[in-house]
Image (cartoon, rainbow, N blue to C red):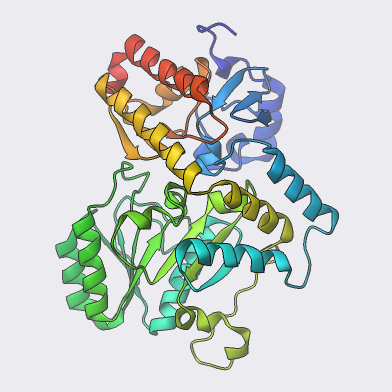
Length: 395
């Protein structure tokens, strides 16, 4: 493929037409859409994927940060295949969910866990847990942070039982707690929200949130669906703060659909089926929640993502970000997550794709352990070449 060929013109027209006839816009996920239509993935191996036109690209998207080990890591494939051969899902619990919960407890010191099927569902469960444990209804969250697609998570203005304040606005949180404190179940924060710019929350701000929530009897809820990959126990390790409840997803599933919440035993007690006669009891099912394929793949993925691997991947991301910033490319993030700040994300996405790099549609980038030095160099070269040819993207 030549650099002046736009892959958007090479995707098989009949496939796009077929897709649009049965799927709104021809896709299922809004986050993967780039006009006029995104290419279709065909296969992935290691850090690279091939689309339906035969175009090969470095996967710096990683299914939106999920694939910490890239595609088809043999150990994960083996674990998932072995689990599948014994049955993909049961109307009974399995050993595999116990094993992954034990691992998460060890990595986070969160005493108990509950699994579901996505990050969005994990946040729904997180808020339900907070409300059940506190017997309060209101939630405070920050404008611009993405916490999934539930009614409590969408929108940038306060509505119903949701109070929305500006990023980092400790005073607004304090005022909301003073006004509504007896009815606030929790304050939910993403410590480095992608859609709000992928900038880390200020440590003093997070400390103050911890103090304020304790003062008013509310819970501190930390959404680590994206950021858990940044530490053995998540990005929260970088803050001298203890969360009451956390939500996880993406990286903990080994490439399969997953979500989870963790917290102290008493906070998750409403989910205990033995407590269903209590007024605060929560009955939460989920046909494929904690299925053995996801649980087995997730445990192996986390086994492989030990402290050394986490530190190495974060160092590679920090070095890449520093190189880009030194060259005048605006980039934020921390560790293995980066985001380019452009004036035209759509054109920047296609420019990178033509140069053999798959980014997020908002130019989010995620490194994986499958990337070697040459792969990271390819990524840097593609970004710098785009910046050199299209400086207007960064003005």
